[in-house]
Image (cartoon, rainbow, N blue to C red; front, side, top):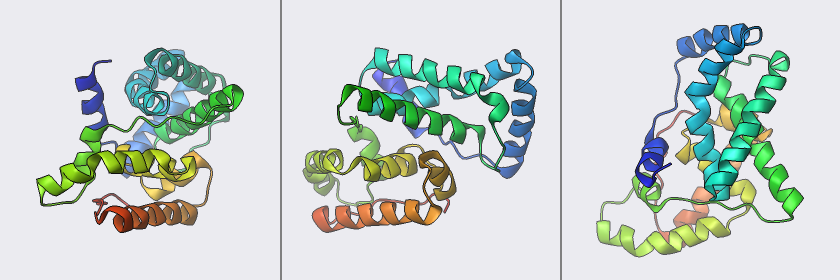
Length: 203
């Protein structure tokens, strides 16, 4: 995947209307009986899941392998999937998060977060461009030094555009816990760098 395509992928809005989520749930039920229908879900979400995994590995081949494993597990366990009013992608992100963490536990390594500076620029709410540039390298370094549990929430909130209900489901935490982690991280960034992150997403 080229750098340009990857950055475009980061900027793609991922919010779905309630009507679209309901319509998708019909396709998911069909996919439980028909692999062709599952192929449509695969085509719809492969790039998004790949981008999510890639930012946690920073290795194209590894990201591809883990993403393939995510969809294989999804297919194998699809009959167990229960609709909870969330996009089907939430379930895929949950599997992906677990697969990445399992890989790093097996390798006894810390999770890598490859956070693109271009995307960070988009979410920093600052008027003075010079001020933004002066903080960029320190900000990226600070994000990469934060606890994995904190960066996970920030990534899902600001890079993937997920609401707190989805984040809670993906990370298997409470919705209040997702909000708490996010707000604490934002306060830390504000205190350390005197910057504000634009959070105009859904609650």
